[in-house]
Length: 131
Length: 131
DNA sequence: TTATATGCAAATGATTTGCGTAGTC
DNA sequence: GACTACGCAAATCATTTGCATATAA
Image (cartoon, rainbow over all chains, first blue to last red):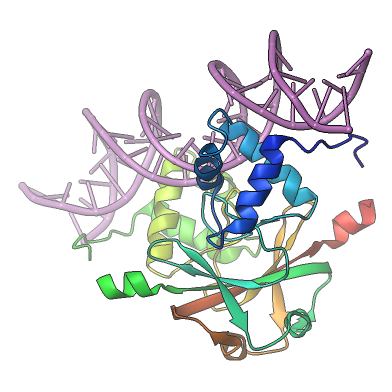
């Protein structure tokens, strides 16, 4: 319940823009590298702060994937991911079922359920080639 | 492809034993605290090293949940988790579908799929009470 | 004008690693 | 006896935060 008035700074706008543009589920560091091409003086701290703000606003998604560093996703709609256990790359996965059907899978839980996320693991084509 | 011969040290055995005994999906620090009651001179580094070894051996599971610190699970069989977005507690969830059915949900992926994990998020009963 | 956001650097938190010694096999 | 694992401490990696200044509204 914050009373703060958010401002659309150049930094914030460009971080959002670049994150929406990519499909690679970048880490904060990768966003930093990309954004720095347009704003050479931006700091990594600003990137972290804005990724936090943007995900609170629901404009981007903070992925709850295993592993560090954390990854972000410009696509907000519910979808699943697959992570290469070898190189760590994360890609989207298309499901045969709807997200609602997945949500309905729970037999019982005392928790009030808010959401869900399926993470598949596997070997990506590139790593498969290299054995 | 390691040629090392593993040894069953007192520390390793007790870490495994304590992890098998609990259902709380503890962090390395929590395992450390528990094990220390029996081995007061054990170091946190040893706990980390052994959790790594034990999960490579498939004797325990390193959870690929979002958030830090990382959590471990003494139950190796496939099952799903629910994490309280408020207090971070992680509990097991029983599914209405089999794990095979979940695996079959993927419509298409260029990855060679190895496994999957569903993480539900919600509010645990305790946090729900406190609003 | 004024409060939010930035850049910078230091602080924090989690995990890993180097090293000399202890203990398993 | 040989070599793995330990305890300890320092190093590394990711992320957060304090502060003085810049800037959006």
